[in-house]
Amino acid sequence: MRRILKYNKEKCQCILIFIKFAKC
Image (cartoon, rainbow, N blue to C red; front, side):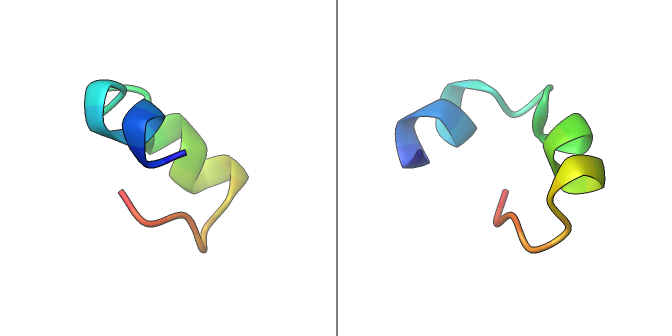
């Protein structure tokens, strides 16, 4: 998942809302 978060910084916000424990 690290690769996805690296190139999906913009979608990081949506991930944070979905997974508050997500490390962006």
